[in-house]
Amino acid sequence: MRFINFTESKLLKKLLLSIITVVIFGICAVFTTVVTYANVPEIVRIGLYFNDSQTGQYTALSNFSIDAANGIQLGIIKDNKFNFLIPETFKNTITISKDFAKNSLESYHVKICGGFNSYNSLIDELNKIKKSGIDAYPVYNDEWQIWEGVYLSYEEAEKSIEEVLKLKLNGYKCSVVQPSLKRIAALSENNKVLFIFDSNESVFGISPSPENQPKVFRINKDNEKRFRGCLEVKRIDGSDMTLINVLPLEEYLYGVVPYEIQASSHPEALKAQAVAARTYSVNNLGKYNRLNFDMCGTVYSQVYKGYNGETAATNKAVDDTKGEIVTYNGKPAAVFYFSSSGGRTEDVKNVWGSTGYPYLVSVEDKYESGTSWRYEWEVSYTAKKIAEIMASRGFDIGNILGIDVTKRSQAGRAIELVVRGSKGERVYKNSNTRSFLNLDSQWFYITTDADVLVKTGEDTYEKTQLAGKKVMTSSGLTTISGDVSVVSRGNKKIKIPATPTIFTFTGRGWGHAVGMSQEGAKGMANNGYKYDEILGHYFPGTKVEKKY
Image (cartoon, rainbow, N blue to C red; front, side, top):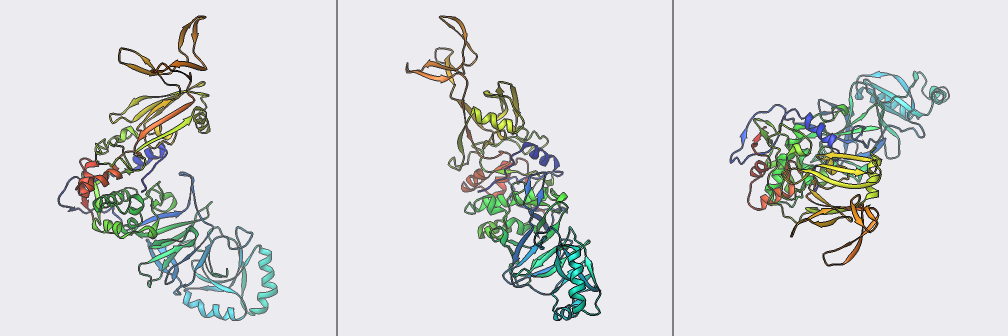
């Protein structure tokens, strides 16, 4: 099972603050109302491969192969719809490339004769040129043209015109085509150019032909991943090719839900997840407008892996809740979900510092199984490793002397933590108490190999460490340092370090703990709760409404 996992609180704060309309889940409504909401789109645009310096995702491709069971078509994407340019259906796998000239980032070509107003109007001329022994191909350059060759330099292309083309193409006017940073080529299996897209006005698109039912294409580059809808291919300045999956919102959710919750979960839990994912989608449309798509397919949005992981159970959950989102005061609510709370969710103000979300509050999560992955966890770090991690992030506070949770939320999670070092100290708050060591959750307690219990009363003890404390010895008042010998409860003498060398974090839950616990949702469903009741529990004061 996967969950929305944000590792940097700065990103989370930015995300929360950027949500203009509020979205969240259904209170225990018996009937679902239908309320028109114009901002729910029919089509969404999901970035599959792209470069993004803001999130550190660098996956843009210089080339990839693509096919579909019954062929693909090449065309343009306009108003989120595919329009074919070439009526031909390509039955075999083709390669899409931006650097199709070997050993060169860009290439030169030769244009033969003038322009044409359609593909059909150039096809006779193209075939005539090919019969002359010239390996020519069609080009869409905001008009139709015929080009020839792939050259590494202007001189090489000029030489071909003078020594080859003028001899074979008597009467045709030829000219050299300069390199372009927006050019995209479709290549055959034997690496011959089938088509070049070089438009300033349109966006290159690839779609499964209508004979494909369902309309699914395959990208071999990434373990033969399959996707519904069509593919938009763009070249953005400073990047290889950006690949964008354009498809209906409901079909997008088919590829999200099984990657966010186990498909074997109770149907009501699956429906709760489907509504949560749909609501999140509505709230995050245009999050990646700077890259010309709505959301990405990673945990920076929602995990989306397309057609391959679809299951009958999760698709049914999407279909059964079609058009339903979580609302607060009639508007989409800010919905978040995660794996496991450990028994209680957290108020958003104690995680990302955000206020003004009365439904993102801490609630009891008593139906979690307690046996889920990382429901309880423990991890240890040496003081040396913690110092290295902090220094790598620009915080050199010297040798680590201690780590103390100085403030906890009402739910029990750390919301202020101080790391003390030989050169100073650093304070972490809210979700940073977790992210500074990439811990599973904010709900943890710390023990060290230097901890001792000092008797403070007849039956009371206080945990402390001995470093820096003063004791009276035969030589007088001495400050404790280095290793010391202490007597345990069993009157056994043991040696421990005065300053901690190992810090052990023992915690509960997995994820940010804001909103819906997926383990809790499964537990509630198993105990007879319906999906709208589940959502209403995790997001108090909200309700589920059908928006289309």
